[in-house]
Every structure is written in C-alpha cells, then in structure tokens.
Image 1: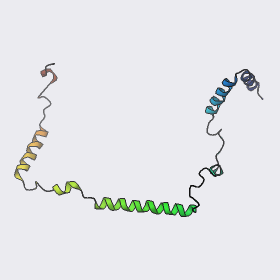
Image 2 (image 1 turned 60 degrees about the horizontal axis):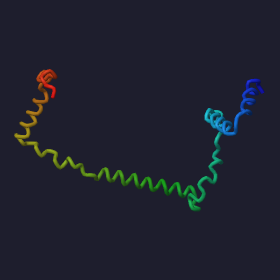
Image 3 (image 1 turned 90 degrees about the vertical axis):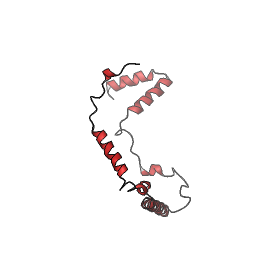
Image 4 (image 1 turned 135 degrees about the vertical axis):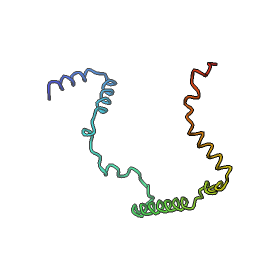
Length: 126
C-alpha cells in the first residue's frame, strides 16, 4: 500500500460514521464506467416474474410483432383514405376574373418597396 493511501485511510478512521457514509457516496459518484462492475444478462433473471403468464417468450414476441404490423397497416390505410380537406376548394376561383384581379392587386402591393414610407421619426411617442 502506498504511503499516500495509508495517510488517507488514517484520516478516514478519524471521521464520524455519518461523514464516512458521505465519503462513500462521494467516492461512488467518482467511479468511471470502466471502474463499475460489468452487468450480465443473468442479472436480469427473475426481475419481471410472471410477465408472460406462462406463455412462451417467442410466441409472445411473434404476437407482439403481428400486433404492431397490423397497427402499421391500419395507419397506412388511414393516411391513404384520408380526405385532403383543401382539395374540395381547389379550382373554385379558376375562371373568376374578380378573384384574379384581387390576386394581382395583392401581388403588386406585396412588391411595393414601402421601406421609406414611414420612419420612426414620423411616429410620435404616446
């Protein structure tokens, strides 16, 4: 054991039990992933007992996949069958000269450079 480690252990021996608990928590938080013990799949054994209620795991997985495939098919069918609400208005103003004039006026107004029309100096403080 290194002298430095021995010195730290001697100082730890002088701590109260509560301070030792706090020290242990701090040291555990300092552990890097490489220092932490490796997990094993066997650690999961029994973690969720009776999850499948005696059903074979592969049968359960297959059933779950089938359910999700069915949901996916239903979603695809809904998206294909869904009416696009805006389509019933498409072409309503196709040959309407009044609407064409309004659209033209709006386009012209949008293209007007009105950056010099107003300035902050022209606006009085209220």
